[in-house]
Amino acid sequence: MNFPSELKYTSDHEWIRVEGNQAYVGITDFAQRELGDIVYIDINSVGKSVTKEEVFGTVEAVKTVSDLFMPVSGTVVEFNKKLDTNPELVNQDPYGDGWMVKIELADAAQVAQLMSADEYASQVGA
Image 1 (cartoon, one colour):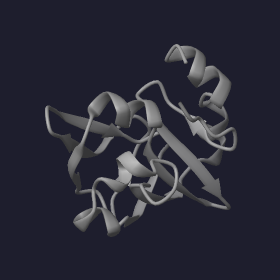
Image 2: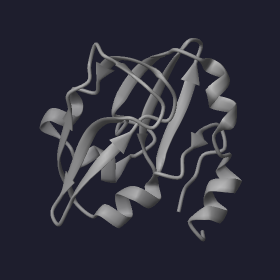
Image 3: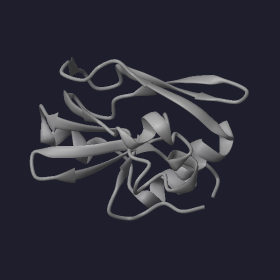
Image 4: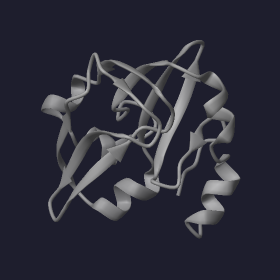
């Protein structure tokens, strides 16, 4: 499994990549493997402030639907429109084209509280 070291991770299997005062959020390689083939992503939080650990959408796979939890507090500024027509990008490239939302950070200090790649890999037994 792949866990890029430049990202931070949550125990709920989301990742975050910070770029200035904005960040990209998605689900981890581990999560997409556990879910299986992803068929639909529902993000209903664009334009809304979402607090850390609050649900910002759902991901639907062939066998299940899972909530998506925000790793840090922020405002959702963009949904990855590629996922409307190609949700399997999350399976194919979870850390690249498969990102889910872009957010404006409310408190950048919260990022430091998240897990490193090594800590996350240890948590999932990789």
